[in-house]
Amino acid sequence: MSLQDKYKELIDTARSAGTGNLQVNEQEGVLHISGEAPSGAVKDNLWNIYGKIDPNFLSGDVVMDIKVATAVEGAKLEVVTQSSNLNVRKGPGIDQPVIGKAAHAEVVTLISKHSDEWWLVRTKNGEEGYAHAQYLRPVE
Amino acid sequence: MSNKQLSTAILCMVFAVMVACKAKTSDTQIQTKVSEQLSTMPEVTADVKDGVVTLSGNVADDATKASAEATVKSTEGVKSVVNNITVMPAAPPPPPATDPAAAINTADEALRTGVTNISKDFPGADIKVDAGIITVTGALSATKWKMLKQALDALHPKKVDASGLKVK
Image 1 (cartoon, helix red, strand yellow):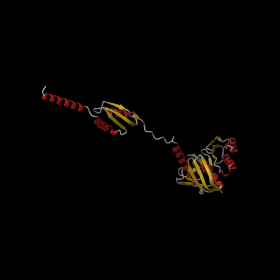
Image 2 (image 1 turned 120 degrees about the vertical axis):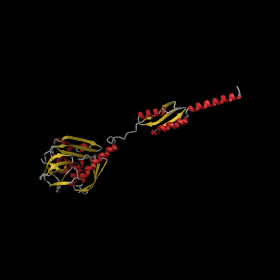
Image 3 (image 1 turned 90 degrees about the vertical axis):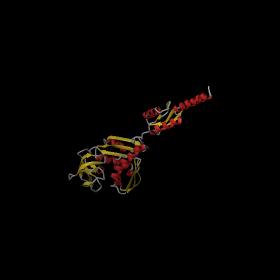
Image 4 (image 1 turned 135 degrees about the vertical axis):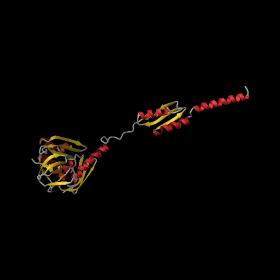
């Protein structure tokens, strides 16, 4: 069974949910899927389907990078750490000094994206700094 | 012709020959001079035979080849120059972008930076990067691993190998 068949449900759902710029290609035995989901919920759903086909993502035959299209400047982002505070740093990098914290589940504002990983945000308290995008999810 | 006159004539002839010989610089002398003049071009070698200098060797450009010939030509006693120097530009170091090994290294650097940013939040997981492939070992909860996998996939690795990871 080809990888595209194995992950057919995932690809079909991504397509039907309106994932922008959807790219699916197979390289050296790994299926690469990327695109921009119209919402955080669509992204979550795609990851759930991926986890259903490949329990615990252990096969290592998919690399999926789904961004959320609504994560644009001025958008509200929820802090999705497990329970801890999110560090807000002076610059983009973990070597940068922490200048503030955003609480778990707090909503912050996206000012700009320095890179895919580091976003400049403004916290509830008005502190501005860089936080890791991994812990930020656009609020619908 | 008296004996004295004859000996004088012979003496004159010998002398004339000697002068002629003196005017004609020997190959050895030419060789010495040419080698001296070419001392700034260690890659060029010269062979002298009957006043004809044959140049050989590899140089980086045409200008060096021409200048070697001009230098040698002006040397006293050189009749002609055979320029057998080959122009072979020194192979420029391949630009890093097109060298596959270097490209992999650069990609790995980017991946490693990304992994370093992420890994601090996932104690228990050991993350390694090699040739575009991220290998995760250790033990993580299913929730944490899902977060980690999402973050790692966003770095665009070739593959995320978690076959050695224990999901609790």
